[in-house]
Image (cartoon, rainbow over all chains, first blue to last red; front, side):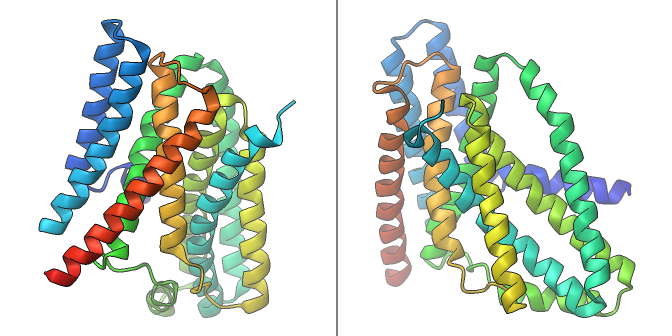
Length: 68
Length: 240
């Protein structure tokens, strides 16, 4: 039972993370957005940071996978 | 009153996302039924659905207690992790860098594994498939519907996907290998990433220009980006 639960836990975590570096970069962009929002940066800048940041993370990750 | 214009994005996202998951669960249930008969497979599926219902029943009141902003931020981040992961995988699969998911192969593998086992094992395999894939469906429904009170259209989208797969599956009685899974994953990845950026921004207090309509702009951006990256990745694979 414990093994089954552990496996289910691993599979649920796997829904969100399979490439650790990719997931970490996504979280870093969100953190950067949170810091910008905390220091009351204009709302549009925080939004742009998220949009451009996520696009950049996706491009970098695909590029990295292609070079492997 | 929810308008059709507000309801269709979560409905479509939940339908497409659930379609992929339900097809995968159906393959395993079908393998269990083929090897050990419909009884253990149906019992395992039923037990899986009861487990899922219990999880949803326990989760619902908890979600109501979480303040809106943190909930939007949490859902947004999870959507980004989930949606961008699917989009990235679909791009790399389209370029041939990762093998495409093959339902026929998955069915054969599962049948082989279950061939030497008991009926209980077949039932457990069906239960596990329904719970795991069902949890993904529940997550997709909550993620695309909970932030804006659109759980009903999202749930309807997921239920429609279940009904469609079940109806076709019962008629064909073989794995639904012709479902264009990678195209579906690409589309859902685009939609979930767009919702993810939107909800993360809302959670951080961003006032998006155009309000909800901003999600359409984000979906277009991720669609163009995804198609461009797919083309680049295919070209890189050919020249390598």
